[in-house]
Image (cartoon, rainbow, N blue to C red):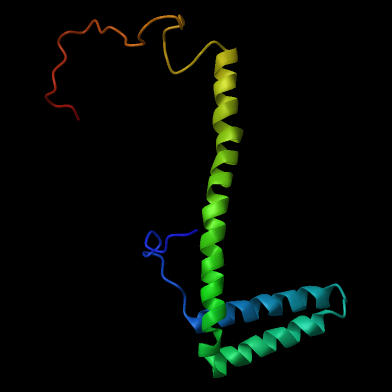
Length: 133
């Protein structure tokens, strides 16, 4: 499914950082539900405390979840990147091309599309490659 050799430049984060991030995430969820006076905030607060205590006392217990989270991120990146790039292409490049066609403009200065080539003949024969910049 995923070739780990192509992703060898991406390094997995430390177990401690993984635990701290998830602890903060559940703490954020807890405060969000506490703000809206929902009693489920206690569950998220307890989860946050549990993960924080594991992170501080036994960070090696988070190795397997950290690896699984890393693999999930690679899978999501493999799936979502082409989808997002396709959406950007179809929302920007395609409408621009259609708009230019409606205006009878385009990347070519020749309006006759039945020509064999779109090369333009230059009239300036004194062009040299010296001092290009």
